Image (cartoon, rainbow, N blue to C red):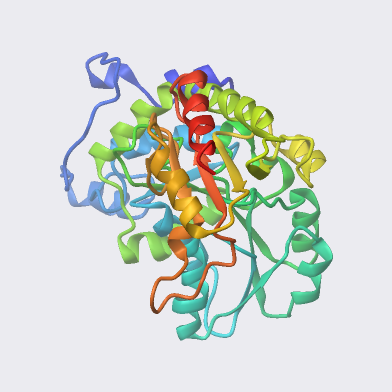
Length: 386
């Protein structure tokens, strides 16, 4: 389906809602029925019927249709956060004694879900360098139920060969899941490579305005129904109709926002490479990126993230560089209008927390919608203090 059709028209049966251009916000907790037979019929199809907003809501249903179409899957669920989407998907397919293989250096809350939470209930796990499919195969057990991918990851942008990973997983009857937040559905469709379940932090590009926290799970009707009747309904992984409407608003401009961030970030990455004060620039679409050929094969663009490793002698030098940046906000996440930095140094020297495996000279930049010259001059001026 054409992306313009998806973003502008799909699911928006305007004749049902006074011919309103914008999708309606059905801000209700409950829905009524004329007869007990009507209620009985709805309960038999709760994933599609409107009974109680904890399960389904008309505004959320419009968003589900658009997100499934964007990811080329049969259905989708929208949750209250990216973390809840990860947890809801994983928890619906494992039980005590099962085993999960996950990429190394995943999103922190994905790591904690496996290592600090599900492990308490007898779920085993291994983190592997999934850049090499052979390393995945070495860890497969008869009890392995999930291969969890994150391509690219969100700091050093390591990729996995999705086709090879899916072929290996299918050979062993393992479900594949991926966090596709980095690329958005515009720059990568994991379903094209055989991935079963695709997860997003909708907080980022899909919403795009830094005012909603949400998650997405996309997959086949069979898999989505299993998650819906399992973790989604049981744990209440819902999103509010109002937040769903804000994401619908954000989707209207997704292509032009992604294009702007992607073009500016890549231009900055190319022009910062070779700077005397920068040890390396990490961006999947740079020819210097170790997996550049795979990135070009799987991804239509690199998005708005890039990572700089500074030529810094001390942590104080890194702190001074950061303090000299005027146009970048220090914050987690990405995907909104505003440009951000996430310095690795904040994860070092915190009492009671092990040092990050990422060296303190690394800084992740998210390039928002501001002008290239506005942002680039800020970085170049801050580099002068090193």
